[in-house]
Image (cartoon, rainbow, N blue to C red; front, side, top):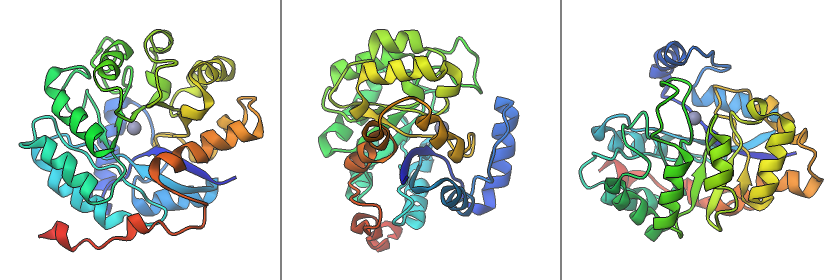
Length: 285
Ligand SMILES: [Zn+2]
């Protein structure tokens, strides 16, 4: 089975070891991979994942440019990065337009690492611009393993308000809508649509197969996408977890691949993604 993993992370080779070490210490959680693009590709080969989406996070306002440049450097027919912009990056909306203009399908935001509440009014220019240019936004949802457990900046109730304000925004909610906040997910996110997607990383093994399957069915199989958060979880195990949900073959295929393929603009597994092989000259200007 071919799969698209919509939630992974990768770092430049020179930084990966240190970044992974620091994140491991902060979260008290061991990585299963090196965190490099090469390591990600090897993991994908072993797990039968044909495309991965490394999600970048701009933890400082001045990182938007470097991240966009790096995302252009690493993208290929198998690597479809989501760049990032910081809420305090000057002209954040302009960066959203630039990301779309470079042919990317989405961007990643993380309320804890970027210090904002998901429903802050100051985020509206980013959400609004992304909706306008058709860029998906992947948002960390629920609690975060590396932050105090009462940190509610990404709580599902806040995401619900974002959806109220931007119903046309394609919103990818990680961790099935809210890590360790799944009761709230049922209340504020499940069934919201048609542009609200739930991503499966770091959730099925915490929820259990049955509760996870119930949540997925309640939301709608056509708006759930496979993700692993690699290198924080194993892609092979992630694929197996989807297979264990008790869904039929068509539903499993939708979650593992076709829902994401539609959103990211991919066709059949072997097609070259012309969108991703554009020249990078303009960016280095
Ligand atoms: Zn992640």
